[in-house]
Image (cartoon, rainbow, N blue to C red):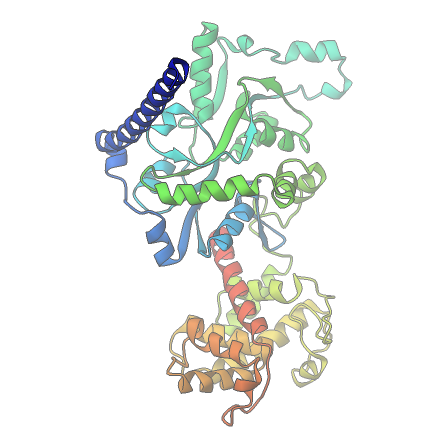
Length: 485
C-alpha cells in the first residue's frame, strides 16, 4: 500500500471513529438528560406500541379559527384535518381533548392525558428542555399586530405612517400584550435585550387563543400583540384595520409536540409529516385555512360559526324541542340531521327521500307529514319514526347501544338489523352490542353466503352504509358535545 493510500485510510478511519463517538455521546446525553431533567424523568413512559395496542390517538387541540372549530355543523380546522388523516393512516381512533389552558399544555402531555399536542408551536431551545418537537409543519415568522387609526381610509399615507410602529425599536418603553408562556413572550424578552431598551409585557389570560387576542387589538382593547405571520395575515384579511407588516423574528419552524420519551411514536409522526408536506392535499389544506381569504371571511361572519355563536344550525330550537319529546340529547339528533341533509330542508336523495330528516314519501304518508320540505314537519315525523324504532329495542339496557341500533334501523330498515342480530347469535357474538358485534354481521349481509342463510328473513343489505352512518353520527356527536353544553 502506498503512503498516500495509507494516510487516506487512517484519516477515514479516524473520521468514522469520531462520528461513532459523537453519536454515542449524543445518545448518552439524551439518556442522561432524561434522568437529570425531573420533568422528563417523571413523565409517562408511553410510546407507539402502547398507543397502537390501545388503538387510540389522544391529541390536545386548541379551539380557534384555524385549528379546530365548527362551521355549519361540520368540524373543521387545519390541525383537525391533518390530525384526522394522521390517525387514519396509523389506523388509530382519534380522540380529541380541547385545551382549556394554553399554559399547562406540556403538563397535560407529560402526565399522559394526551400523546401529542396538535397546536402549531414555535420550536425553541427553551421548550426543548421539557418536550420534543415533531418535524415542522410549516415555516413562518412573528409579526407585530397593531391597529390603524379609525379614519385610516381617509388619511394620507405619510400621516398614517406616523401613527404606526414601523420598526421594533420603536416599542421601547411601550407595552405589548401576550400570553406568559408563549414563544411571543420569549421573543419580546430577547428583543428587549437586543435593542437595549425595555419593552413592557401585559400578560394575558392563558385561555385566550391567538385569534381572540388579535380580535382584541382590532377592537381597540389592546394596543399591540404578536402573532405568527400566517395567522395575523388571514385575520387581517377580514379586519383591514389591522397592520401586520412589521416582523420581529427571522423565519421560524412551527411543529407539534410529543413527550421526549415517545421516541418511536415521534419517529412515526415525523416520517408521516415529511411524506405529507410535499403532497398537493397537504398544500390545499394549508391554503384553505391560512391563504383563502374569501372562505375565512365567509366563515367568521356566519351565524353558524362556533366561535361567533353557540349555534349548530338555524334549526337548533326545533331540534331541541323534538329531541326532548324523543328523550335524546339534542346534539345527537342534530348530528343525525346533519348526516341526513346537512341541514338543507330541500335536500333530495337518489332514492327519493326528502327534507331535513330525509324521509321517504310512503313513510311520510304513514307519519302524516304535511310537507317534506317543512323543517318542523320533517323533524316531527323523523323523531316520531325514531321513537317507534327506539321502543322496539327496549330490551337493550344500555342507552347508547339502543340509540345506535335505532339509528342503524332508521338508515337501512328495522328488519335488516334483526337479521344482523340473528347472525350475531349464530356466531357467538352479543346481539345487543353494536361495535364489533352486530355491525360486523351487518357487513356480512352484503354477501350471498350470509343473506341466503335460512334464518335471514330480509335478505341482502349493503351493510357498509348503516355501519358508516352510525359511526359518523356518533363521531360528529362527540364534536358537538365538545363545542356546546
